[in-house]
Amino acid sequence: MKDVVAALVHANQYLVIGYFLALNTVYLVLLALAGRTIPRLARRRRLTGLDDLATSPLTPPVSIVTAAYNEEPTIVESVRAMLALRYPRHEVVLVDDGSRDGTFDRLREAFGLVPVERVRPQEIASQEPVRSVYVSTHSVPLTVVRTANSGKADSLNVGIDLASHPLVCMVDADSLLDEDALLTLAQPFVADPLHVVAAGGVIRPVNDSVVRHGQVVEPRIPRGWLPRIQVVEYLRAFLMGRTGWARLHGLLIISGAFGLYRRDVLVEVGGMNADSLGEDFELVVRLHRHLRDRRRPYRVEFIPEPVCWTEVPDGAGVLARQRRRWHRGLYETLLRHRRMLLRPRYGVIGMVAYPYFVLFELLAPLLEVWGLVTVAAGFGFGLISPALALLFLLAAFGYAILLSLLALLLDELGLHRYRRLGDLAAVAAAAVAENLGYRQITALWRLQGWWASLRNGTPVWGEMTRSGFTGTTPLDHGSHATVPETTGPAGPSRQPDDDVPPSGRTAAR
Image 1 (tube, one colour):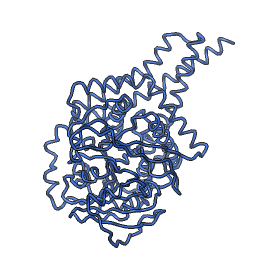
Image 2 (cartoon, one colour):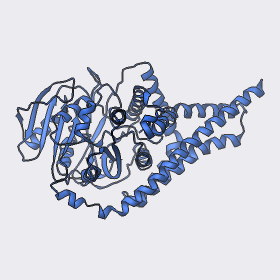
Image 3 (cartoon, helix red, strand yellow):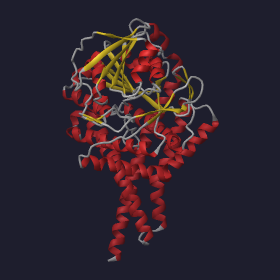
Image 4 (cartoon, one colour):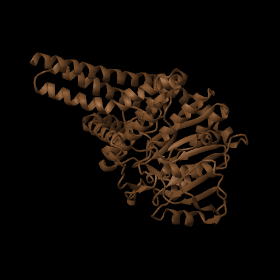
């Protein structure tokens, strides 16, 4: 009997080892594809024609749409940064999603807001009517819309509906964009206006970086280990994952923190899905499905150069809620659009990208936890050899550490964002530390999110603490905004950790 059990344990371990080898090899392929794209973009950086775009009357105007809920410490700096972007013509449409702090008061004082009569087109349905609309008296193209609390997706739909320009850029209210980020992201739409329907840029953690006048003037690696490890996750996810998938024409995710879309296509598909926890992921999947079903040629692009800076959780409680929500949103989106799986009519999306997300993103935490438990049990009872246990560790963790370090090297050679040697050493150390407890506990959190979805449990976010931006120093950790634990009529209220999961062993994003 012992021999039978030992044989089953061995077979299981080889299956798990094979899974991790396949998973990390897919990441290696994506990294290789990104390795051909990013250096080429870096070499062409000075020849991109941004100056021409910035002055050309033919550059399509953009409406920046953002939803804010209890963002008092950062909202004024964020809006100023959006208004100051180098772009020939753009407006900011901010939807105050029923904030209960001083968000609106800060905006009114800073921008001289006055009420106006504005008829909403009602091209996109939303659950909450517009209560009031304000415009700035400071000669800046700013519109602020006040609604009852109805959730981020519903608020964005209100903003899209009131947007007056053909391109819509959705940005998180607590994020900061590089000065040329919007110009860079608009380039694919200028080059191919008939086919490009959406484009996404890079998200990077801003924690502990130096911010002046709404611009990140000195990127720094966060001091805390939790946000520091998230720097590694975001590097791997965006530089390796999304750049690679874009090369394959299989990009399924554009981050909700920074994405540019054709407004007519957003209206055509009905805007954001207010019932989805991963509304930005679900939107891109729905765009693919809608356009493929109608056999219309289109492109979804990813540009690794424009950067959106955002705060990442620096506490385990908020991080846990974020990862549970990410995985729950992943599962519910894949379930909602399951008819795309392995359907040739959806091309690379249905035959390659969708199966990848099922096998290597949705199932990854389950198999990772199962592999660790069975290896530990088998080793403890003497059913597997130390050599087999070592092989598992190398396949699951050693390979992953190597990929993270290669992603860091690619970032340094191609984009060179972090200029201090100490920052590079800190990120390299975080790439190793990620696999020593952090990765295992996040796998458990993701399983909890999946289980909650299977039980149809009500999502709860609890409190999220944000640090305010200051004018001359790193983020001021003495100013905080607290997001209370609430749910709106259509589910959770404005999510504090609302970016999409990064694709690349993080939680699908």
